[in-house]
Amino acid sequence: MMSERAVGKAAVIQGAVEGHYTVKAAAAKLRISERQVQGLKKAYRERGVEAFVHGNSGRLPANYREDEPRARIIALKKSGEYAFTTFTHFKELLLERENIGISYGAFSALLKNAGIESKRTHRGGGKRFKRRERSGRPGELLQVDASRYDWFGTGMRSVLHGFIDDATGNISALYLCRNECLMGYLEVLRHTLTTSGIPAEWYC
Image (tube, rainbow, N blue to C red; front, top):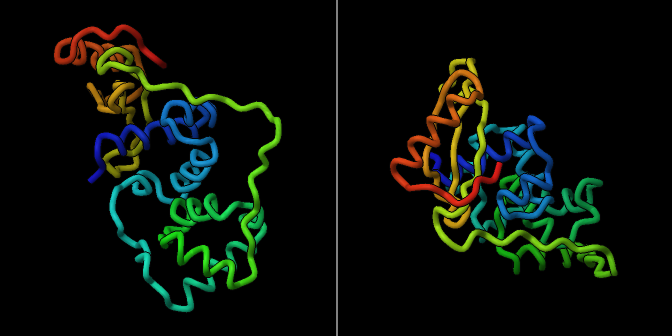
């Protein structure tokens, strides 16, 4: 079962996949890197919302040492897709895209013993963007979003409207209907005002 946080995360990534907002906007909403958003988009395309279900199902344990997964990790690192990643980035992508979890020590030793060195991150004078800080007070800023998905597995998509508290990541209200519409947002707003009070700002 998905947590409220996972539902919100899935909704944002689905919106990015469907073109409702950019990778940069999704990264700002979720407070993760654009690189991680790209990995989550790929996971969503391959597995849908199941990619966001918390748990260790299908994940290799950290001390798993059989030859097959070790050889797979080495082969993936040498492939064109991962060849130029740092060890840290590659380890993140292994978990996000390949569902392989391994301790960093074992992971680093495996690659170094195979003659693979970590690519150094360029630290030149390029422009750097400061990540937006979370709102300081619960209820002050609400993120507003809607996500279209086949929530019931019937082949018919419906739209889940929702407000997410920027400070805590908690969902204040959800409303499901056939299409994204003003009524859906007003119902979420009505419930939020009734149960949580009036926010100072909305972030769409």
